[in-house]
Image 1 (cartoon, rainbow, N blue to C red):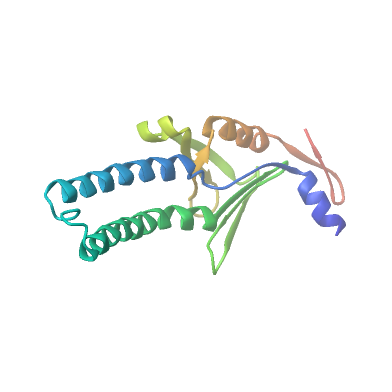
Image 2: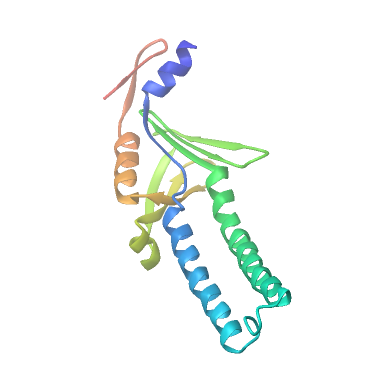
Length: 177
C-alpha cells in the first residue's frame, strides 16, 4: 500500500485524450442536419399532413435514425478515451493503450530522444494536439499521445522531466541533478 502512495506522490500529470470539444461540435452538426431533414419532411408534406399514426412513426424513425448515427459517430471518440491513459511521473512517462489487452510503455530520460508537437487547425481551435515521442533503442520507436488537452504545457512538462539527469551515488541510490 505504501508503494501506491509513493507512485501517486511522484505523479506530475495524468491525462486521457480530450474528446469533449469534438463531441460537442459533432452533436451540433448532426442536430443541424437532423433539423434540416425534419424540416424537409414536413415542408414536402411527407409528415404532418393529417397527423396520422404513420406520420408520427416516420417522425420517430427519423429521430431514432439520427440518434443511432450520432451514437456510432461518437463511439470511436469514446473508445479512444477509454483505451488511452498518459501518466507523467517525476522520473518517467507512462503510456497505456488498449481496452481488453493493455500495452504499457514506460519512457525514462535515458531512452528519451525527441519530442514533437503536432497541431492541426481544428486541434488548435479545440485546444488539443498530438505529442510524438521518439525513443532511443536498437530500433527507433515513436510513441504518440493523441488529443492531449493543452499540449504545449504538457510537452513542456515532459521536456522538464526528460531533461533531468540522474546520477548513481551508491548502490541503488539515485539522485536528480
